Amino acid sequence: MKLITNKEMKILREIAINEYGIPSVVLMENAARSVCDEILKIKQEVSRVIILCGVDNNGGYGFALGRQLFNENVKIEIVIVGDPKKIQGDSLINLEILRKMNIKIESVNDIGGINRLKNIVTKYDILIDAISAIEIEEIKDTLKLLIEAVNGLENDIISIDIPTGVDGNTGKIKGVAINANMTIVLMLPKFGNILYPGAEYCGKLIIKNTGITPMIIDKLNLTTNVIEKKEVRENLPLREKNSHKGMFGRGVIVAGSIGLSGAAILTCRSALRAGIGLIELFVPESIDGIISSNVTEVITCPLKETRKGVIGINSISDIIKGVKRSDVISIGPGCGNTNELFEIVKQIILESEKPVIIDADGLNVLSRNIEILKDKKAKIILTPHIGEMSRLTGLSADEINENKIEIVKKFAKEYGVILVLKSARTVIGFPNGKIYININGNSGMATAGAGDVLTGIITSLVAQGVEPEKSVIIGVFIHGYTGDLMAEKFGEYGLVAEDIIRGISKVFKELTQ
Image (tube, rainbow, N blue to C red):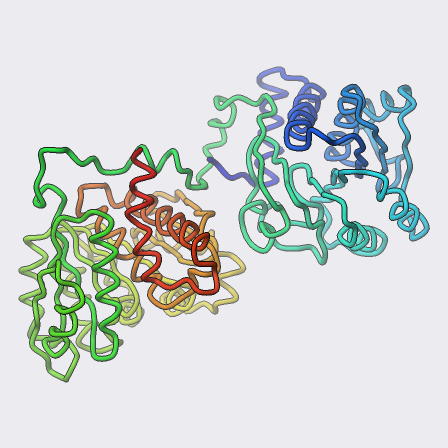
Protein backbone atom coordinates (compact mmCIF):
# COMPACT_ATOMS: atom_id res chain seq x y z
CA MET A 1 0.00 0.00 0.00
CA LYS A 2 1.39 3.38 -1.05
CA LEU A 3 1.67 6.47 1.14
CA ILE A 4 1.03 9.92 -0.27
CA THR A 5 1.74 13.56 0.66
CA ASN A 6 -0.78 16.40 0.57
CA LYS A 7 0.83 17.78 -2.59
CA GLU A 8 0.85 14.39 -4.32
CA MET A 9 -2.83 13.87 -3.50
CA LYS A 10 -3.62 17.22 -5.08
CA ILE A 11 -1.69 16.20 -8.21
CA LEU A 12 -3.51 12.85 -8.24
CA ARG A 13 -6.89 14.60 -8.25
CA GLU A 14 -5.76 16.93 -11.03
CA ILE A 15 -4.67 13.98 -13.19
CA ALA A 16 -8.01 12.21 -12.58
CA ILE A 17 -9.95 15.37 -13.46
CA ASN A 18 -7.89 16.82 -16.31
CA GLU A 19 -6.42 13.75 -18.03
CA TYR A 20 -9.11 11.13 -17.37
CA GLY A 21 -12.14 13.42 -17.42
CA ILE A 22 -13.56 12.45 -14.02
CA PRO A 23 -15.55 15.48 -12.83
CA SER A 24 -14.33 16.76 -9.46
CA VAL A 25 -17.87 16.74 -8.08
CA VAL A 26 -18.04 13.01 -8.93
CA LEU A 27 -14.85 12.35 -6.95
CA MET A 28 -16.39 14.21 -4.00
CA GLU A 29 -19.59 12.18 -4.34
CA ASN A 30 -17.65 8.90 -4.49
CA ALA A 31 -15.66 9.84 -1.39
CA ALA A 32 -18.78 10.76 0.55
CA ARG A 33 -20.51 7.54 -0.54
CA SER A 34 -17.61 5.41 0.61
CA VAL A 35 -17.61 7.13 4.02
CA CYS A 36 -21.39 6.80 4.29
CA ASP A 37 -21.27 3.06 3.54
CA GLU A 38 -18.56 2.54 6.15
CA ILE A 39 -20.46 4.46 8.83
CA LEU A 40 -23.62 2.44 8.18
CA LYS A 41 -21.60 -0.79 8.24
CA ILE A 42 -19.61 -0.19 11.40
CA LYS A 43 -22.41 1.46 13.35
CA GLN A 44 -25.67 -0.04 12.12
CA GLU A 45 -27.58 1.21 15.16
CA VAL A 46 -26.59 4.81 14.42
CA SER A 47 -29.54 7.14 14.03
CA ARG A 48 -28.12 10.61 14.76
CA VAL A 49 -24.95 12.13 13.28
CA ILE A 50 -23.51 15.62 13.65
CA ILE A 51 -20.97 16.66 11.01
CA LEU A 52 -18.41 19.43 11.58
CA CYS A 53 -17.54 20.84 8.15
CA GLY A 54 -14.68 23.15 7.26
CA VAL A 55 -14.70 25.60 4.39
CA ASP A 56 -12.32 23.63 2.11
CA ASN A 57 -12.74 20.34 0.21
CA ASN A 58 -12.99 18.29 3.39
CA GLY A 59 -16.04 20.33 4.32
CA GLY A 60 -17.49 19.44 0.93
CA TYR A 61 -17.09 15.74 1.73
CA GLY A 62 -19.00 16.43 4.95
CA PHE A 63 -21.84 18.20 3.13
CA ALA A 64 -22.18 15.37 0.60
CA LEU A 65 -21.98 12.79 3.39
CA GLY A 66 -24.75 14.58 5.29
CA ARG A 67 -27.09 14.35 2.30
CA GLN A 68 -26.36 10.65 1.80
CA LEU A 69 -26.86 9.78 5.47
CA PHE A 70 -30.09 11.81 5.47
CA ASN A 71 -31.29 9.71 2.53
CA GLU A 72 -30.56 6.62 4.67
CA ASN A 73 -32.97 7.95 7.32
CA VAL A 74 -30.21 9.11 9.67
CA LYS A 75 -30.92 12.31 11.61
CA ILE A 76 -28.33 14.88 10.50
CA GLU A 77 -27.08 18.22 11.69
CA ILE A 78 -24.35 20.19 9.91
CA VAL A 79 -22.05 22.61 11.72
CA ILE A 80 -19.90 24.85 9.54
CA VAL A 81 -16.58 25.66 11.22
CA GLY A 82 -15.41 28.99 9.82
CA ASP A 83 -16.92 31.62 7.54
CA PRO A 84 -19.57 30.09 5.20
CA LYS A 85 -18.85 32.87 2.67
CA LYS A 86 -15.48 31.22 1.94
CA ILE A 87 -17.10 27.99 0.71
CA GLN A 88 -16.89 27.59 -3.06
CA GLY A 89 -16.79 25.11 -5.95
CA ASP A 90 -17.99 21.55 -5.37
CA SER A 91 -18.29 22.18 -1.64
CA LEU A 92 -20.71 25.04 -2.27
CA ILE A 93 -22.75 22.90 -4.68
CA ASN A 94 -23.23 20.27 -1.97
CA LEU A 95 -23.99 22.90 0.69
CA GLU A 96 -26.70 24.47 -1.49
CA ILE A 97 -28.32 21.05 -1.94
CA LEU A 98 -28.45 20.63 1.85
CA ARG A 99 -30.09 24.04 2.22
CA LYS A 100 -32.78 23.09 -0.28
CA MET A 101 -33.39 19.87 1.65
CA ASN A 102 -34.00 21.93 4.82
CA ILE A 103 -31.29 20.04 6.75
CA LYS A 104 -30.33 21.89 9.91
CA ILE A 105 -27.13 23.92 9.42
CA GLU A 106 -25.34 26.04 12.00
CA SER A 107 -22.04 27.96 12.02
CA VAL A 108 -19.35 28.17 14.68
CA ASN A 109 -17.10 31.22 14.60
CA ASP A 110 -16.69 32.20 18.25
CA ILE A 111 -16.76 30.97 21.85
CA GLY A 112 -20.54 31.35 22.01
CA GLY A 113 -20.84 28.97 19.06
CA ILE A 114 -18.54 26.47 20.75
CA ASN A 115 -20.68 26.48 23.89
CA ARG A 116 -23.82 25.92 21.80
CA LEU A 117 -22.08 23.06 20.00
CA LYS A 118 -21.22 21.32 23.29
CA ASN A 119 -24.89 21.36 24.26
CA ILE A 120 -26.06 20.16 20.83
CA VAL A 121 -23.55 17.34 20.38
CA THR A 122 -24.82 15.28 23.33
CA LYS A 123 -27.96 14.51 21.30
CA TYR A 124 -25.96 12.67 18.62
CA ASP A 125 -24.41 9.18 18.40
CA ILE A 126 -21.43 10.09 16.22
CA LEU A 127 -19.49 13.26 15.52
CA ILE A 128 -17.87 13.47 12.07
CA ASP A 129 -14.71 15.57 11.73
CA ALA A 130 -14.73 17.04 8.22
CA ILE A 131 -12.97 20.27 9.21
CA SER A 132 -9.53 19.45 7.78
CA ALA A 133 -7.46 22.67 7.97
CA ILE A 134 -4.54 20.86 6.29
CA GLU A 135 -2.96 24.08 5.04
CA ILE A 136 -2.96 25.83 8.44
CA GLU A 137 0.49 26.10 10.03
CA GLU A 138 -0.83 25.98 13.59
CA ILE A 139 -4.29 25.47 15.06
CA LYS A 140 -5.12 28.42 17.32
CA ASP A 141 -7.79 30.81 18.54
CA THR A 142 -11.41 29.67 18.03
CA LEU A 143 -10.51 26.51 16.13
CA LYS A 144 -8.15 25.47 18.94
CA LEU A 145 -10.91 25.95 21.52
CA LEU A 146 -13.33 24.03 19.32
CA ILE A 147 -11.00 21.03 18.96
CA GLU A 148 -10.32 20.99 22.71
CA ALA A 149 -14.08 21.04 23.33
CA VAL A 150 -14.70 18.20 20.87
CA ASN A 151 -11.96 16.06 22.45
CA GLY A 152 -13.63 16.56 25.83
CA LEU A 153 -16.93 15.07 24.62
CA GLU A 154 -17.97 11.45 25.07
CA ASN A 155 -19.20 10.97 21.49
CA ASP A 156 -17.54 8.56 19.08
CA ILE A 157 -15.50 10.68 16.67
CA ILE A 158 -14.82 9.71 13.05
CA SER A 159 -12.42 11.84 11.00
CA ILE A 160 -12.57 11.99 7.22
CA ASP A 161 -9.15 11.39 5.65
CA ILE A 162 -7.06 12.72 8.58
CA PRO A 163 -7.95 14.24 11.95
CA THR A 164 -8.00 18.02 11.92
CA GLY A 165 -4.74 19.32 13.35
CA VAL A 166 -2.55 16.42 12.18
CA ASP A 167 -0.02 17.35 9.50
CA GLY A 168 -0.64 15.01 6.58
CA ASN A 169 2.99 15.14 5.46
CA THR A 170 4.74 14.47 8.75
CA GLY A 171 2.31 13.32 11.44
CA LYS A 172 3.21 16.35 13.56
CA ILE A 173 0.47 17.99 15.61
CA LYS A 174 -0.28 21.61 14.78
CA GLY A 175 -0.67 22.64 18.40
CA VAL A 176 -3.81 20.57 18.98
CA ALA A 177 -5.69 17.91 16.98
CA ILE A 178 -8.96 16.00 16.92
CA ASN A 179 -8.55 12.71 18.79
CA ALA A 180 -10.60 10.34 16.62
CA ASN A 181 -11.78 6.82 17.38
CA MET A 182 -11.58 6.07 13.67
CA THR A 183 -10.29 7.73 10.52
CA ILE A 184 -11.77 6.86 7.13
CA VAL A 185 -8.94 7.51 4.68
CA LEU A 186 -9.81 8.51 1.14
CA MET A 187 -7.93 6.49 -1.49
CA LEU A 188 -4.43 6.39 0.04
CA PRO A 189 -3.16 7.06 3.56
CA LYS A 190 -1.11 10.18 4.16
CA PHE A 191 2.19 10.01 6.02
CA GLY A 192 0.39 11.68 8.93
CA ASN A 193 -2.02 8.75 9.19
CA ILE A 194 0.91 6.38 9.72
CA LEU A 195 3.69 8.29 11.49
CA TYR A 196 3.64 9.23 15.17
CA PRO A 197 2.38 11.27 16.87
CA GLY A 198 -0.35 11.71 14.23
CA ALA A 199 -1.08 7.99 14.04
CA GLU A 200 -2.13 8.05 17.69
CA TYR A 201 -4.88 10.58 16.88
CA CYS A 202 -6.30 8.57 13.98
CA GLY A 203 -7.67 5.61 15.92
CA LYS A 204 -8.59 2.71 13.67
CA LEU A 205 -7.75 3.32 10.00
CA ILE A 206 -10.19 2.35 7.25
CA ILE A 207 -8.99 2.85 3.65
CA LYS A 208 -11.75 3.54 1.10
CA ASN A 209 -11.55 3.80 -2.69
CA THR A 210 -12.95 7.00 -4.21
CA GLY A 211 -12.92 5.97 -7.85
CA ILE A 212 -9.32 6.82 -8.76
CA THR A 213 -7.94 3.73 -10.50
CA PRO A 214 -4.50 2.14 -9.85
CA MET A 215 -3.56 3.21 -13.39
CA ILE A 216 -3.85 6.86 -12.33
CA ILE A 217 -1.96 6.26 -9.06
CA ASP A 218 0.90 4.60 -10.96
CA LYS A 219 1.51 7.84 -12.83
CA LEU A 220 2.89 9.42 -9.66
CA ASN A 221 5.62 6.79 -9.12
CA LEU A 222 5.10 6.88 -5.37
CA THR A 223 8.10 5.41 -3.53
CA THR A 224 6.86 4.99 0.06
CA ASN A 225 4.90 1.90 1.05
CA VAL A 226 3.25 0.38 4.10
CA ILE A 227 4.10 -3.30 4.63
CA GLU A 228 1.01 -5.46 4.19
CA LYS A 229 0.37 -9.03 5.35
CA LYS A 230 -0.54 -10.10 1.80
CA GLU A 231 2.90 -9.11 0.49
CA VAL A 232 4.61 -10.96 3.35
CA ARG A 233 2.59 -14.13 2.72
CA GLU A 234 3.43 -14.12 -0.98
CA ASN A 235 7.18 -13.91 -0.37
CA LEU A 236 7.72 -16.40 2.44
CA PRO A 237 10.29 -19.14 1.66
CA LEU A 238 8.74 -22.46 0.66
CA ARG A 239 9.45 -25.66 2.57
CA GLU A 240 9.19 -28.86 0.56
CA LYS A 241 8.22 -32.06 2.31
CA ASN A 242 11.19 -33.92 0.84
CA SER A 243 13.89 -31.71 2.37
CA HIS A 244 16.89 -31.58 4.69
CA LYS A 245 18.62 -28.87 6.74
CA GLY A 246 21.01 -28.01 3.94
CA MET A 247 18.06 -26.76 1.90
CA PHE A 248 17.21 -24.07 4.44
CA GLY A 249 20.49 -22.24 4.50
CA ARG A 250 23.63 -21.86 6.54
CA GLY A 251 24.29 -18.70 8.52
CA VAL A 252 27.31 -17.34 10.35
CA ILE A 253 26.61 -15.19 13.40
CA VAL A 254 29.38 -13.28 15.20
CA ALA A 255 28.01 -12.24 18.58
CA GLY A 256 28.55 -12.11 22.32
CA SER A 257 31.17 -11.03 24.84
CA ILE A 258 31.60 -11.18 28.62
CA GLY A 259 28.33 -10.05 30.19
CA LEU A 260 26.54 -9.92 26.82
CA SER A 261 26.20 -13.59 25.92
CA GLY A 262 22.40 -13.20 25.97
CA ALA A 263 22.47 -11.21 22.73
CA ALA A 264 24.12 -14.13 20.92
CA ILE A 265 21.64 -16.60 22.40
CA LEU A 266 18.58 -14.52 21.43
CA THR A 267 19.85 -13.95 17.88
CA CYS A 268 20.42 -17.66 17.35
CA ARG A 269 17.14 -18.77 18.90
CA SER A 270 15.10 -16.39 16.77
CA ALA A 271 16.95 -17.45 13.61
CA LEU A 272 16.19 -21.10 14.41
CA ARG A 273 12.52 -20.37 15.07
CA ALA A 274 12.35 -18.55 11.73
CA GLY A 275 13.46 -21.71 9.92
CA ILE A 276 17.21 -21.52 9.22
CA GLY A 277 18.84 -24.89 8.53
CA LEU A 278 22.20 -24.43 10.28
CA ILE A 279 23.98 -21.77 12.34
CA GLU A 280 27.68 -21.39 13.02
CA LEU A 281 28.06 -19.06 15.99
CA PHE A 282 31.46 -17.42 16.40
CA VAL A 283 32.03 -16.35 20.03
CA PRO A 284 34.95 -15.53 22.34
CA GLU A 285 36.25 -18.81 23.75
CA SER A 286 35.65 -17.74 27.37
CA ILE A 287 31.84 -17.66 26.91
CA ASP A 288 31.56 -20.76 24.72
CA GLY A 289 30.39 -22.87 27.65
CA ILE A 290 27.57 -20.47 28.52
CA ILE A 291 26.42 -20.32 24.90
CA SER A 292 26.63 -24.07 24.26
CA SER A 293 24.54 -24.89 27.30
CA ASN A 294 21.81 -22.42 26.30
CA VAL A 295 21.58 -22.95 22.53
CA THR A 296 22.21 -26.62 21.91
CA GLU A 297 21.08 -26.52 18.26
CA VAL A 298 23.91 -24.34 16.94
CA ILE A 299 27.51 -25.09 16.07
CA THR A 300 29.66 -22.88 18.29
CA CYS A 301 33.04 -21.79 17.01
CA PRO A 302 35.07 -20.49 19.99
CA LEU A 303 37.62 -17.90 18.94
CA LYS A 304 40.90 -16.91 20.54
CA GLU A 305 40.89 -13.71 22.56
CA THR A 306 43.39 -10.88 22.81
CA ARG A 307 41.51 -9.71 25.91
CA LYS A 308 39.21 -11.81 28.08
CA GLY A 309 35.77 -12.09 26.54
CA VAL A 310 36.67 -10.14 23.36
CA ILE A 311 37.22 -11.75 19.97
CA GLY A 312 40.80 -11.18 18.89
CA ILE A 313 41.97 -9.65 15.62
CA ASN A 314 43.89 -12.85 14.91
CA SER A 315 40.52 -14.60 14.55
CA ILE A 316 39.53 -12.67 11.41
CA SER A 317 40.79 -15.40 9.07
CA ASP A 318 38.67 -18.04 10.85
CA ILE A 319 35.57 -15.87 10.53
CA ILE A 320 36.22 -15.20 6.83
CA LYS A 321 36.52 -18.94 6.20
CA GLY A 322 33.15 -19.41 7.89
CA VAL A 323 31.62 -16.66 5.79
CA LYS A 324 32.77 -18.34 2.57
CA ARG A 325 30.90 -21.54 3.41
CA SER A 326 27.74 -19.72 4.54
CA ASP A 327 24.79 -18.01 2.84
CA VAL A 328 24.74 -14.96 5.12
CA ILE A 329 26.70 -13.41 7.98
CA SER A 330 25.39 -11.35 10.89
CA ILE A 331 27.71 -9.47 13.20
CA GLY A 332 27.43 -7.23 16.21
CA PRO A 333 24.89 -8.34 18.86
CA GLY A 334 26.58 -8.17 22.23
CA CYS A 335 30.12 -8.01 20.81
CA GLY A 336 31.22 -4.90 22.70
CA ASN A 337 32.40 -1.62 21.20
CA THR A 338 36.05 -2.60 20.68
CA ASN A 339 38.91 -1.87 18.31
CA GLU A 340 39.07 -5.58 17.52
CA LEU A 341 35.43 -5.61 16.41
CA PHE A 342 35.97 -2.61 14.14
CA GLU A 343 38.75 -4.46 12.31
CA ILE A 344 36.60 -7.57 11.96
CA VAL A 345 33.59 -5.62 10.65
CA LYS A 346 35.83 -3.73 8.22
CA GLN A 347 37.35 -6.94 6.87
CA ILE A 348 33.98 -8.63 6.46
CA ILE A 349 32.62 -5.63 4.54
CA LEU A 350 35.64 -5.60 2.25
CA GLU A 351 35.85 -9.36 1.65
CA SER A 352 32.43 -10.99 2.03
CA GLU A 353 30.61 -11.88 -1.16
CA LYS A 354 27.61 -13.06 0.86
CA PRO A 355 24.97 -10.70 2.32
CA VAL A 356 26.10 -9.05 5.57
CA ILE A 357 23.80 -7.96 8.41
CA ILE A 358 25.32 -5.48 10.86
CA ASP A 359 23.59 -4.73 14.16
CA ALA A 360 24.21 -3.35 17.66
CA ASP A 361 27.93 -3.03 18.45
CA GLY A 362 28.71 -3.76 14.82
CA LEU A 363 26.99 -0.47 14.03
CA ASN A 364 28.69 1.33 16.88
CA VAL A 365 32.15 0.46 15.59
CA LEU A 366 31.11 1.08 11.98
CA SER A 367 30.28 4.68 12.94
CA ARG A 368 34.05 5.26 13.30
CA ASN A 369 34.35 5.07 9.50
CA ILE A 370 31.15 4.51 7.56
CA GLU A 371 32.91 5.30 4.28
CA ILE A 372 34.11 1.67 4.15
CA LEU A 373 30.54 0.75 3.20
CA LYS A 374 31.27 2.16 -0.25
CA ASP A 375 33.91 -0.55 -0.81
CA LYS A 376 31.61 -3.49 -0.06
CA LYS A 377 31.38 -6.54 -2.32
CA ALA A 378 27.98 -7.80 -1.18
CA LYS A 379 24.63 -6.43 -0.08
CA ILE A 380 24.75 -4.89 3.38
CA ILE A 381 21.82 -4.66 5.81
CA LEU A 382 22.11 -2.21 8.71
CA THR A 383 19.59 -2.42 11.56
CA PRO A 384 20.12 0.60 13.86
CA HIS A 385 17.79 1.95 16.51
CA ILE A 386 17.57 5.74 16.84
CA GLY A 387 20.65 6.01 19.09
CA GLU A 388 22.80 3.92 16.75
CA MET A 389 21.53 5.90 13.77
CA SER A 390 22.58 9.05 15.58
CA ARG A 391 26.13 7.70 15.90
CA LEU A 392 26.19 6.65 12.23
CA THR A 393 25.02 10.04 10.93
CA GLY A 394 26.21 12.52 13.55
CA LEU A 395 22.63 13.80 13.83
CA SER A 396 20.82 14.09 17.15
CA ALA A 397 18.01 11.70 18.05
CA ASP A 398 15.55 14.60 17.83
CA GLU A 399 16.75 15.50 14.34
CA ILE A 400 16.29 11.91 13.20
CA ASN A 401 12.83 11.57 14.74
CA GLU A 402 11.78 14.84 13.10
CA ASN A 403 12.66 13.63 9.59
CA LYS A 404 13.11 9.86 9.67
CA ILE A 405 11.99 9.04 6.15
CA GLU A 406 14.20 11.53 4.34
CA ILE A 407 17.22 10.67 6.50
CA VAL A 408 16.76 6.93 5.87
CA LYS A 409 16.26 7.51 2.15
CA LYS A 410 19.36 9.69 1.85
CA PHE A 411 21.60 7.33 3.87
CA ALA A 412 20.49 4.18 1.98
CA LYS A 413 21.13 5.90 -1.36
CA GLU A 414 24.46 7.44 -0.42
CA TYR A 415 26.01 4.25 0.96
CA GLY A 416 24.15 1.74 -1.20
CA VAL A 417 22.83 -0.22 1.76
CA ILE A 418 19.54 -1.62 3.01
CA LEU A 419 18.75 0.40 6.13
CA VAL A 420 16.29 -0.73 8.80
CA LEU A 421 15.69 2.12 11.26
CA LYS A 422 14.00 0.51 14.27
CA SER A 423 11.38 2.55 16.13
CA ALA A 424 7.66 2.57 16.91
CA ARG A 425 7.24 2.89 13.14
CA THR A 426 10.22 1.03 11.69
CA VAL A 427 11.38 2.60 8.41
CA ILE A 428 13.19 0.53 5.77
CA GLY A 429 15.20 2.28 3.08
CA PHE A 430 16.68 0.83 -0.12
CA PRO A 431 19.44 2.18 -2.39
CA ASN A 432 16.90 2.80 -5.18
CA GLY A 433 15.03 5.31 -3.00
CA LYS A 434 12.11 3.08 -2.07
CA ILE A 435 10.84 3.21 1.49
CA TYR A 436 8.75 0.71 3.47
CA ILE A 437 7.10 1.47 6.82
CA ASN A 438 5.91 -1.15 9.29
CA ILE A 439 2.82 -0.29 11.32
CA ASN A 440 2.48 -3.29 13.64
CA GLY A 441 4.30 -3.82 16.94
CA ASN A 442 3.74 -2.30 20.37
CA SER A 443 5.44 -0.62 23.34
CA GLY A 444 6.13 -3.99 25.00
CA MET A 445 8.77 -4.56 22.33
CA ALA A 446 10.81 -1.66 23.71
CA THR A 447 12.77 -4.18 25.75
CA ALA A 448 16.34 -5.46 25.88
CA GLY A 449 17.03 -8.09 23.24
CA ALA A 450 14.10 -7.34 20.92
CA GLY A 451 16.52 -5.99 18.30
CA ASP A 452 18.62 -9.18 18.50
CA VAL A 453 15.44 -11.15 17.76
CA LEU A 454 14.87 -9.10 14.60
CA THR A 455 18.46 -9.68 13.48
CA GLY A 456 17.95 -13.41 13.90
CA ILE A 457 14.74 -13.44 11.85
CA ILE A 458 16.28 -11.48 8.97
CA THR A 459 19.41 -13.67 9.06
CA SER A 460 17.24 -16.78 8.81
CA LEU A 461 15.24 -15.49 5.85
CA VAL A 462 18.34 -14.47 3.87
CA ALA A 463 19.92 -17.87 4.58
CA GLN A 464 16.80 -19.59 3.22
CA GLY A 465 17.26 -17.86 -0.10
CA VAL A 466 14.93 -14.89 0.24
CA GLU A 467 16.39 -11.77 -1.40
CA PRO A 468 17.82 -9.39 1.23
CA GLU A 469 15.34 -6.66 0.23
CA LYS A 470 12.37 -8.96 0.76
CA SER A 471 13.94 -10.50 3.86
CA VAL A 472 13.95 -7.18 5.73
CA ILE A 473 10.35 -6.43 4.73
CA ILE A 474 9.18 -9.89 5.84
CA GLY A 475 11.40 -9.93 8.91
CA VAL A 476 10.32 -6.54 10.23
CA PHE A 477 6.65 -7.41 9.71
CA ILE A 478 6.93 -10.81 11.40
CA HIS A 479 8.86 -9.29 14.29
CA GLY A 480 6.14 -6.69 14.96
CA TYR A 481 3.27 -9.08 14.27
CA THR A 482 4.72 -11.60 16.71
CA GLY A 483 5.13 -8.86 19.30
CA ASP A 484 1.44 -8.00 18.95
CA LEU A 485 0.43 -11.65 19.22
CA MET A 486 2.42 -12.15 22.41
CA ALA A 487 1.28 -8.83 23.89
CA GLU A 488 -2.29 -10.12 23.63
CA LYS A 489 -1.21 -13.08 25.74
CA PHE A 490 1.11 -11.44 28.29
CA GLY A 491 0.33 -7.72 28.05
CA GLU A 492 2.73 -5.01 26.91
CA TYR A 493 4.21 -4.31 30.36
CA GLY A 494 5.60 -7.79 30.88
CA LEU A 495 6.77 -8.60 27.35
CA VAL A 496 10.38 -9.78 27.02
CA ALA A 497 12.49 -10.81 24.03
CA GLU A 498 12.09 -14.53 24.78
CA ASP A 499 8.30 -14.11 24.51
CA ILE A 500 8.70 -12.79 20.99
CA ILE A 501 10.88 -15.78 20.06
CA ARG A 502 8.23 -18.16 21.42
CA GLY A 503 5.65 -16.62 19.10
CA ILE A 504 7.64 -16.73 15.86
CA SER A 505 6.63 -20.27 14.93
CA LYS A 506 2.96 -19.46 15.55
CA VAL A 507 3.13 -16.49 13.21
CA PHE A 508 4.83 -18.51 10.45
CA LYS A 509 2.12 -21.14 10.87
CA GLU A 510 -0.62 -18.53 10.53
CA LEU A 511 0.99 -16.85 7.52
CA THR A 512 1.45 -20.13 5.64
CA GLN A 513 -2.04 -21.55 6.25
